[in-house]
Image 1 (cartoon, rainbow, N blue to C red):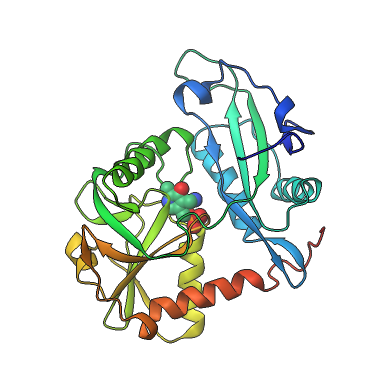
Image 2 (image 1 turned 120 degrees about the vertical axis):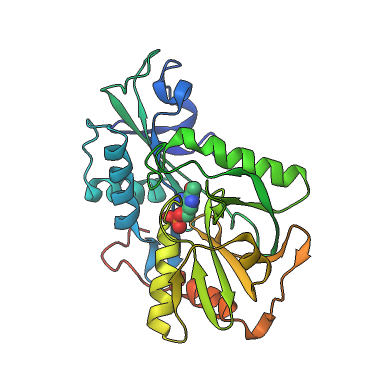
Length: 298
Ligand code: PMP
């Protein structure tokens, strides 16, 4: 359940009950997917509830809008952050997923509509893949070609690609899909980025056809800080994943999800000794420490 009778959402300048919110059935976003979204998490820390990487997420929302030629969107990062914290307070949530969406006005045609709307909702959401390591499959679907749309933007309609890959994997009994890019290199999961560990080093697919996640960047920064190993951005083949010592997915919803097997073949998974596991622990520690000292509403 994403909302109940009491849930408050933000819609175009007003805080209203989710159950009372109304949007047009002719929105271009509903029909053709022309809109942009974000996925953000807030965590309870020693200094109250704080939004993790708020600036990075709201900046990406504005960037996505700009790449999709949604020129009328004019909320600042500060305003967006304020709305998100207000929603957490109004809904009395200490740990939450925050979903902003810029959706467009009415159109039957295919030219981007001038008017845009801002929705933001908050809800409880457990780690997307749970805590158990995942059995993944190499998807029969590929990430869209980078020339087909701005792949580093979070565009509503493009998520049909993710939904097909994830649903195919579920129906075949797997926990998640891994999509290749148009050239056959490893790209990412439907809503998360991929890291593999081999001989004490981490590798991740470079920018190109992936959505370069904020969690991915956080992991790269953490690895650098720890100085124990390094992350190389490298074009990787499915065989590299199959021969990896360990592998994991990263994303705001998933946080870190370890991979157990690929297409039914188990990974070596050096368990306690793996760098990946230590990085996963360091990441969850980061989420519980104070990272935005200026904001403490709850
Ligand atoms: N790829 C896709 C397609 C996603 O939707 C997400 C989630 N936003 C990610 C990767 C991971 O990005 P982030 O770490 O910024 O959540």
